[in-house]
Amino acid sequence: MPVVWRTRSDGVKQRFNLSPLRSEIIKLYLDGLSSRKIGGKLNLSHVRILKILKSENLARRKLIKPILNKNYKNLTPERAYLFGVMCGDGCVFSGTEYKDRWSFKSHIVYLSVKDKDFLDEFVKNFIMVYGVKPNIYYRDRKNNKWSNIWTARVNRKLIYEDLAKYNFAKFWTIPDEVMNSLDKNIICSFLRGIYDSEGSVSLGSRGASISICSVSKSGLEQIRTLLSRINIKSSHLGQYAVRDHPEKSICYYFTITHLNNYLIFLKEIGFSIKRKEKQLLSYIKNLKRYSSSPSNLKTSLLNI
View (cartoon, rainbow, N blue to C red):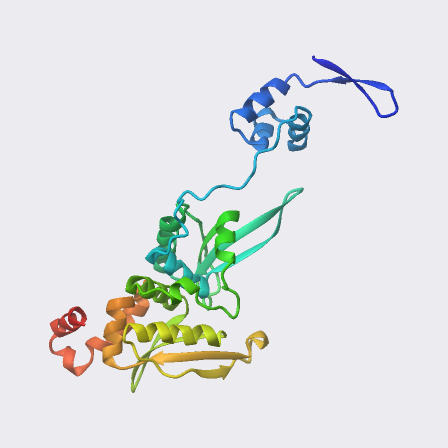
């Protein structure tokens, strides 16, 4: 077993027996294996591996994983869709997580929803933007009153930092690059993301409406502005008190009504969530002018 002598600060010499695995540890680390995996492979503690690497003056590799798509900051329809989702149901946060005896900093981007088609659309666009596939989780809730939950989750510092610089908090606002864009595809893709998250279709005895609500009054006003750019007229903002959630005392909303607006919405924006789209299409198909000839509906959609 290799031996080294070291002199303490008080001048006393001490003998140290070096691990016979030291050379193998160094080789494995230089070959790219992580310190934790080396410990598992050689049945040594992670702390012991770190001490050996430090004694050999080997700098620890950074744990930050790169974003595979180098052009991820370019504003594309896919990135605009992610922005829309993040203004709604998406979430970014950082904090400390614990596993066994270890604590570590996490940087999380995630989406939890009940509609699998919504989650699939989010994941597809996420991969297109960042080149990274989120981890997918499913939770079957035993209470029939509660919906089962699909979750997409990514723990990547650089992705977190990219999204955290925008105002996706409680009183969110639309990113400036989307608001300033003249590209119709960008605008419509963002709107689809926010309507997938916060939009709903209501059917009543007097007709139908596409509504959206949020505590962010300024955010909804911006959405109305974007809708007007693609010739969709909407109502003025309304508001109501949310008694069950004191922290959300006032919620704002507006609606889209009238057939022509529905048709533009379906053609230019649409829903990734099929149940929402089916509700609206069902209402339109039952109108007198379309009930006798379903082909009229398809023609109207194509001719807008």
